[in-house]
Length: 397
Ligand SMILES: [Zn+2]
Image (cartoon, rainbow, N blue to C red; front, side):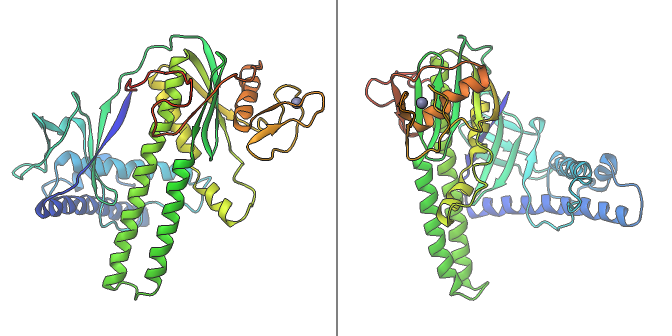
């Protein structure tokens, strides 16, 4: 299995910045050439250029890039055409690449990347100076891409060890939420709630700051110096928030997987909250819901589970949050505490834990008892709450 390690290139010398910018421009030129060839062939009812034709057309030192970086652009272009072709019958409005690009991510496949001690060497073609970066490199390195993300970043493919198999035989379910990023219950009687409030507040701050900048920008002439400065500020803000949210998301999902490992979980069901966003609930709540990225939570959890050797599967969680776990009565949910209105039952419990408990019946066909102890965690913390299980503190996973 492979993961991507991201290196942010801060404090670059102006000359280096210029070289990186020039490299991205060259990659875009390669793309534009491929696009022109494709469009010409398509308009002239000629066979579309394939791999060999594109490689031939881009050969011969016309571009200031390493030959394999040029090839990567061609491959990407062809992959793009292929995908469009497949999706065109079902998505008639989809278009083959037609826009000219100004900048593009530059890629180096694994065999083109070299290292010299702590230095990463990215070749720029025969007879030209290679790009060199002093980085904290892992033992084995793979393909590298030069990405613009409100600043330059190197994305490096790194092999990740995979655990053979989970040690235990327990089962668990995860209820994803916006206020509580994940509510986990296991058949071993453990329950964990990871707060999503940190991410929520980061996004709220982002929305407010962005609004301020946008109001300022509205008073400028479009394209003026001040307008452009504000445009930059917006890009920086966006990139920063994205990094902060990503960091929290990794920390939160890691905490979940740590608990699963500690409890010897073999199989985990991740409820898919699809459909929650459909209904209109006022502009503030609608914004929150549209910014809730549960797909990412799900993807991160699946990846981390795979690395830990835990089997994960997903499915609809429909109806799990509105059913009483003891008497099966269905009712509308109000507030954070679930209170059963059945006079014979009178069950009380945490709303998200109830959702997670009901998923056990849905996914594994048997119910579990309400956990006697619930651990609350915030993504930044390691282990918390009075009497919480010290699940694998400090182990890197
Ligand atoms: Zn009940």
